[in-house]
Amino acid sequence: MKNSFLSSEGSIGRCSFFLRLALLAAIAAGISYVSIYYFGHPDYFHHGTFRTLGVFFGIVASLICMMAGLMQLLKRLRDMGREAYLSIWMLIPGPNVLLLLYACIASSKEKN
Image 1: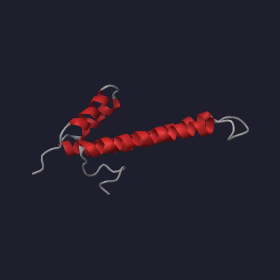
Image 2: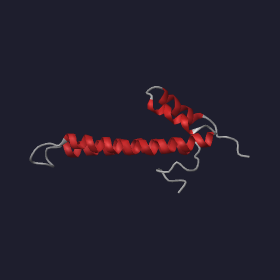
Image 3: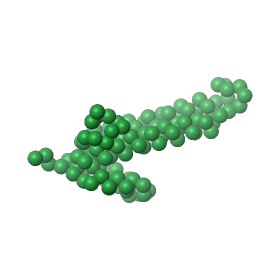
């Protein structure tokens, strides 16, 4: 269970962290694109378009992927030997990007 996307238990390295974040971003973007195209296209529904329903599905998928990404950040912070409260910086636009870059670049804590 420690390698689960939805669990914050365990730790992961730099490469795994970056690849998991890239995969989660691709999943969120793909679901958003497909749902907006499907529900916004007039050929699929003959009574009108439902583009807002597609946007809703895209937002829900993005929120789920963001929560899974937060779990990956907690694993990475644990691997770097940092405290979990640093993940609060993800709520502030600007420093959140710097925290993600730091998590992708910083080395792991030495194991005893």
